[in-house]
Image (cartoon, rainbow, N blue to C red; front, side):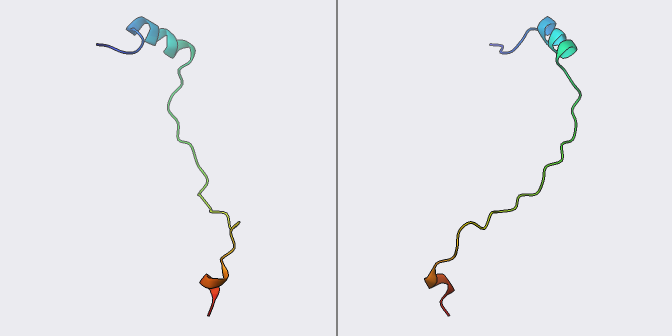
Length: 44
């Protein structure tokens, strides 16, 4: 069983919508500090 567009449709899709692969820069994840520690965890 074959899934996906036929070779002719793939060629047409690449011609009209296809682009070359490119590297994307993503910012590093920085967790938010919206939770304050509870009194038991900070007790000395």
